[in-house]
Image 1 (cartoon, rainbow, N blue to C red):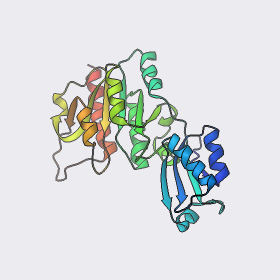
Image 2 (image 1 turned 60 degrees about the vertical axis):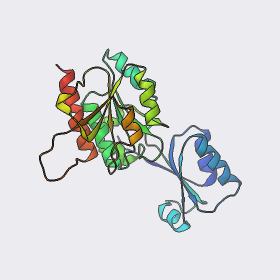
Image 3 (image 1 turned 45 degrees about the vertical axis):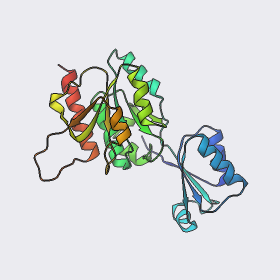
Image 4 (image 1 turned 120 degrees about the horizontal axis):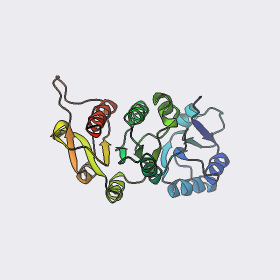
Length: 246
């Protein structure tokens, strides 16, 4: 299967994309442009929580594939997003306690793709990512997932911390990765669980960390003090798998 990352250029094309319901991850707008169509696009972007970046004309010219961007270029998702309820439904269909990955502002598409691949192989029912300050389902993510994106639903939410609160009402417990936590082998990670993985540089944000029930550390013996986000996700995911198989 080929993967297409949709680049939408031109004011009318972007407006029509919104009206047709196409999921748009990010919009680049010519800095200082405030005319009618651009204001319409900005209203639609705000309504759909789309990230807007204001850039110079030279940047838009570099990004443009057609040379006719008219001051606006949008990046649309290569795949449709699921809803959080779709992920819970997948767990119910398999008669399994929910196992969900929640990603706190992962910015590298290769990391996101690798984590989705791990989630699929570990038997997770889905992945939840934030709408802003994080990478979406681009073609790079799809390629790096090695096909897992065809089988693992990914939901996009406005607020990860609030989503954790809502999922707690569904009986889930949450564990986040942090080097200052309890060794993962000493935690009870069975049952309905959400695995929270933080940003590549800053880790899990303070607010999200405070919502978690457990903080897990991965034993490390080397000379550096952190793992790549996707590797950390894999290590913790398979400790969860090990405990679920008991």
